Image 1 (cartoon, rainbow, N blue to C red):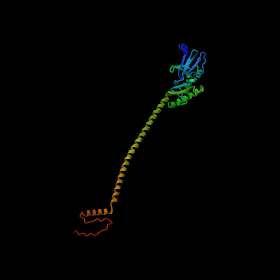
Image 2: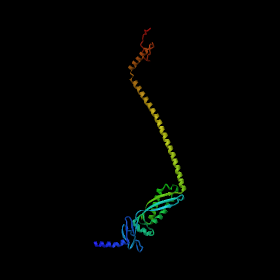
Image 3: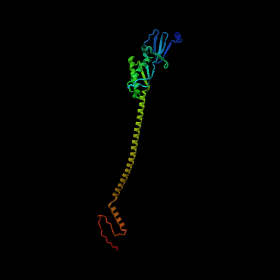
Image 4: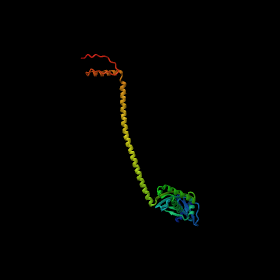
Length: 292
C-alpha cells in the first residue's frame, strides 16, 4: 500500500512541475475543454483537476458586478438625460457554467478581482443596457430623480425575465441593481431646484402661520383661564357669604330676636330722647311718663 501511494505521489510530481494541475475553489465551477475543442457539458465542482490532456477553466460562481457609466437614455418626455450610472450584480448557477460557456464561447475572460474566469458577462451587459434604456423611457425626466427604488426594481425584474427567457430559469441571477448617479436634463434640474425652493418657502410660511395661530390660541387660553379663575373666585366668595348668612339666619331663634330688640330699645332710650321705637306688629303696653 505504501509503495502504491509513493508511486502515485511520484507520478503527480511531473504534472505539478509542468503546471498541469488546476485547483477549483469552493463556490466556483470547472469547465473542461478537450484539446479537440469539445466542451464537457457536465460542469465540474470544487477539487483538483489534471490539465495534461485538456484545458480546465475555473469559472466564478460568486457574485460579479457590471458597471455602466455615462449613459444618456431618453426619458418619456423625450429629454436626453445628462448622466446615468448603474451597477448590476449578477451570479451564475455554477452547475450551468459549462452550458453558458457553450452558448457564449467567446464570452469568457479572466477577472483579476475575483481570481477566476467569468462567463456570459458581455451578453448580460448588452441585455442590461437595453433594459436600462427601456425603463428610463417609461418615466418623465421631471420625476425620475424621485423614483430610484422603482427604477432599480424595474430594471432588475425586466432583466431577470429576459435572462430566464433566453437561457433558463435562474441560470444567471440578478442579485442587485444600484443607480449610483442620475442627472436629468440640466434645464429640468434647474426647474426642479426652483420648484423645491418655492415649495420650501411656502412650507416655511405655512409653518410660521401655524405657529402664530397656536401662540394666539395659547394667549387666549391664558386670558380666558385668568378670567375664569377670577369668576370662580367671586363665585366661591358669594357662596361663602350666602352660606354664612344662612347660618346666621338659622341661628336667630324668637327668643334671641326678642332679646336683641329689647337691648336695641334700651340703648336707644339711653340717648335722652322721649321717642320710643316699637317694632311693627308688636303689642304696645301703655307707659306713664312721669318725668317733667
